[in-house]
Image (cartoon, rainbow, N blue to C red):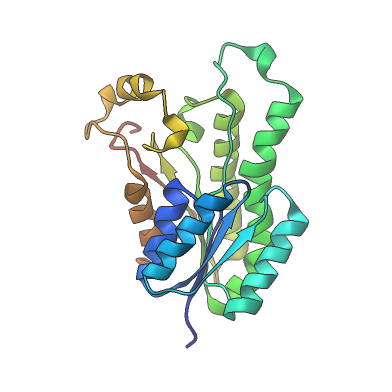
Length: 244
């Protein structure tokens, strides 16, 4: 069988980068995607190469359906197929939940275009190729979609929607393709820079008492992608027990 292939959206930094490197170490060819962070994406690609895997970098906003379709088509043409799609790309606006007037249509549309429609676009484009290899999808959502606590109300709503999309697509894509999600709590990436005190307070009720690092989330992504064959339509919470 030809080499397995993983496409990780939003893999210039953080969780996406950790996943890309982990797939490389497992022998996958890796497609690295970014929308703005070109230098970081190049660094991710170098880490993938250092792990011994073929890699190609794609600049595309997942919120652009045509760009996503073109990216997936090129991944398949370059590497011969697609086995795993990780929908990690995401965006937010940090807006206090009580500041309702700040929740403009532009804010709602920006967040939902990337976090929900973008993941759907990638799943739709990837489906026939995943079916051909009996592959799978892992969506990176958030405990914000379960608890309603997060960077903004639209962000929480978008992640709740993506959790639901995960379940819907698991039904639609079976039996050939599995679809699951990982719902992280706070992750120590540049997204949370300057908000460490807020994170520490949030984690006071977490039995494990610490935030995730990107590799903690990559553990769960890799498990759902490669470590199970009978798991689909599941949202795996990885937050040190804060949400239970």
